[in-house]
Image 1 (cartoon, one colour):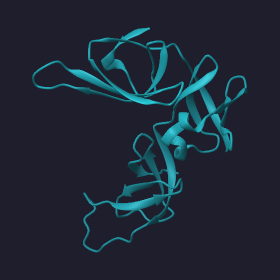
Image 2 (cartoon, helix red, strand yellow):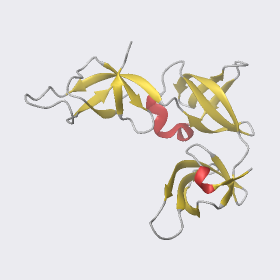
Image 3 (cartoon, one colour):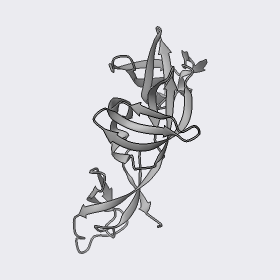
Length: 188
């Protein structure tokens, strides 16, 4: 299926010269003068080589036909991460490099979208937000204003993010899986 370059998003699978690539980032640039372009960072699925391509935003690219299905995360072992199809209960093993940086956000029984091409998982789409617990953070500095000052915090998944001064250890917070940034205090 051919689509214009500006519609390419993270997680899409592109077919270039009979090879499949998973899109890591896609960013459009609109300079004041000249042609708007879309820069696409991608990883070749067959061997993991990363590459960057720049297209005119109206240029056509070939999107591979992949099946996106909902899977539930089960567990991780030495062979990879294991997911279960929520419709027919088939299990699938996903290599760690397909999951990439999102591995830290996976939680037991979490539902994710897996892109499967010819029976092989090629990309994963995590929920936009996850709830994590703050394990450690710096104490509040007296006189700090709450409006714009943030402090570093260590999260239950081992990651780090910046949180407002009122958030302390043991607080459950919501973070974005895309960049790990703080959204809000968890409502539960």
